[in-house]
Each structure stands twice: as structure tokens, then as C-alpha cells.
Length: 355
Image (tube, rainbow, N blue to C red; front, side):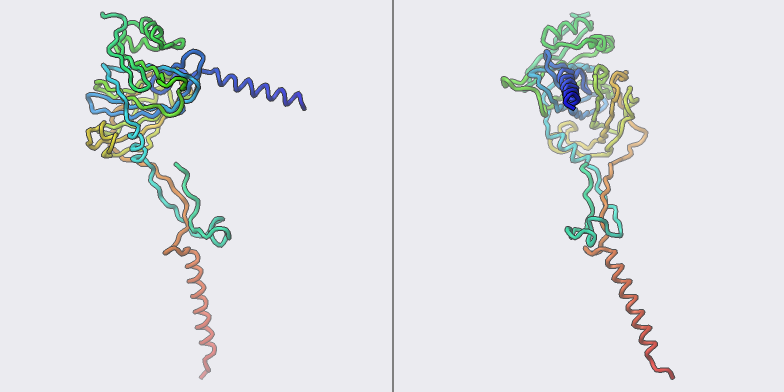
């Protein structure tokens, strides 16, 4: 028995050690690279994209875990980009706008939690719903934005781009330079970001400040190809603000994209800065990538044939009542009164003297 316990402990320790040294090389937007032997993982990436037919804005926010004091990621963009800090409040507004519709689904007879089947509860409501030609590399600009060191780059050679990134602290995993070549061939530019907290001794964990990236584009594109380097399943969540309902042109190697909300909204607060306070059609899309190596392109989104609205519906079971009184009880009482009245009438008829 002792030998079995020791063997089990050894397996558990080996498994934990493997999880500690396994790096996370990619996220939905590009390549996430931890410094040295540290580890970093993206638990959740949320992005809102604003497209007006001429330009595109992407605001992204990461929830990360790990022990890395510094990390970096690179995002290809089809045009000259500007970068600044975003406002995290816009994600709260998006969550409010896309909340599922809550509907009651009534049932007639009492269930386990309903009186009189449950003596410990007088509540007549069922369970609540679940919560839902130039130099090989050119530096367009470099600035410090909070905990981010942002470099905006051009490149005519993928190897030169790799060398520049490594020289400037952006250590790349094997194979990333090869994945960058299609972007170099298309003359895309790059946003390279070092996540370096100013506070000494602080590691990158929790919710990071969002970044807003803007560039000119006549098509709505969301860079995804670099995520094929990820070693674990990836997930993507997109909020798209445009003139019409939008959909991915193809699944690009992932599961079928799912629309979780579609409809015209009037953004408020921080979110209104993306649309200048004007109404826009909001499409919320979720997609899973069980095998990231199958990702073969960037997402290109296009208008759907019709701007059909959609909102998820969450049903919760609720005992049918009338003014707070269970309908079954009223029904039984009515039946009882009817039976008693009929019995009384029958007795009266039988008690009358015969002529």
C-alpha cells in the first residue's frame, strides 16, 4: 500500500511540474511570450472591434495568470496603427447590453421545493436560473502606456523582424518568424507590446489594462494566424460594432462560431467613444479552437444577408400562481367547492317530500 501511495504522489508531482514549465505562446490576438523560464497564460481574452468601413479599432483586455515579471506579445495589423490605453468600463457596458433575456417557464403541480412538499420553505418559486525598399525594420513609434512598452514597427524581412524583437527584449518561440512571413509579404505592420509592471517585484496576473489599437482598413479583419503556435486549446470572444450584423467568412480551422447576441444598440459611457455616441449594430461572437495548429488564416468578417436580431434566452421554472396563490391549490379548492355544492344540491333534492 505504501508503495502505491508513493507512486501516486510521484505521478502527481510530475504532472504539476510539467504544468509549471509549459509556456503559453499564443493568445487570440497574436503571440504571448513570457520572459526566460517564467510562465504566463491567458485565462480570458475579450476584444471589442469597431468598424466603419474605412477604419478599424480593436480594444482588447487580458486576464492572465502565472509568475512572469515581464512578457510580450506581437500583433500584425494591415495598416499604420496608433495605440493608447482603453477604458475597462466599456466591457461592463457590453456585458449589460448582451445579457440574456430571462423568461419564466411555469409548471402547475408543486415540486420538491414547493409547499406542501417542502416543509422548510414557503417559497412558491422554483430554482433560480444558472448565472449565466526601406530598412528591414522601421520603428514608427515607441511609447510607454501604463504597464505597457509599445513599439509600432514595419518590416520587409521576417528574420530581420525577429532579430529586432529579440534585441529589444521580445524573445520569440521557435517558428514564429516563419508565421510572420505572410504578413511581411503583404506589407502589414506590427504592434509589439512588452508587459512590464513599473512596480518592482510585481508579476503579471489578474486583469490587465485594456489597449486600443486603431488602423485604416476597408475590410474588417481580426488577426488570428499566430495563435496556431498555441499548445493548448484557445477561445475567442469578439464584440463587433458595425453598420450591420457581421459574421466570420470561415471558421479558419476552429469550431463553428456562435453568435450570442445581435442587435442595434446605443452605446453609453466609455463604449460610446467607439461610435461617437451613435447607434451601431452589435454582434457578439464566441469561437473555440480545440486544435490551434489547424488555424490557417486571420478572421475576416463580413455583413450577413439580413440584420436579424438575436438574444439568448435563459428559462427558469416557476410555480404557476394567481395573485401569489398556487394555481393548483385554487383549482383543487374550486373542484372541492363544486363537489360540495353538487352534493348539497343532491341531498336537498332527495330530502324534499314526494307529492
